[in-house]
Image (tube, rainbow, N blue to C red; front, side):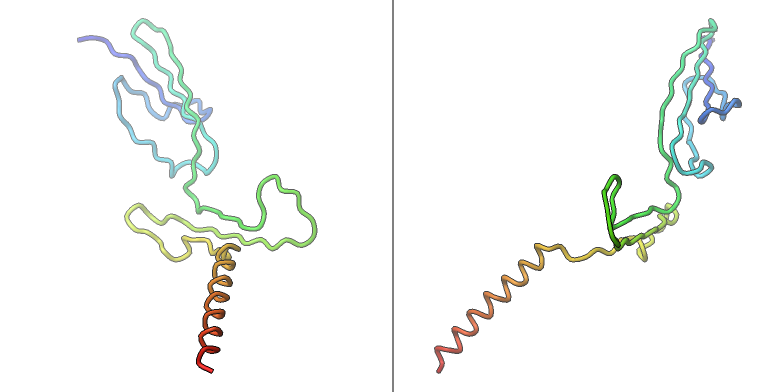
Length: 135
């Protein structure tokens, strides 16, 4: 039987590993036990001769409700009163989809208003022109 490397899996800067296993290994990382924000997975492997290898994988956890903000962006210079809309919605669980509150309402874009006004003007022009012919 050949000797295998031992793998120690750490989350963030914890002193105690989440798992100590022999390679190769497959596991599931349960992010629901972690707070939202930046984390890193630190994997230390030790071969049978005692040499160590290290791999650090940064990742971001976002299990909480998503937050969407309209009216201000990061790094924006502002003055006066600014209307801001904040929407927060959760993902629900993995088997169902929450439709209520999962979209952030937004205003109608300016180009849609231009199209509507242009079409209304064109329709009014031909309506008036048609009515003048009948007189």
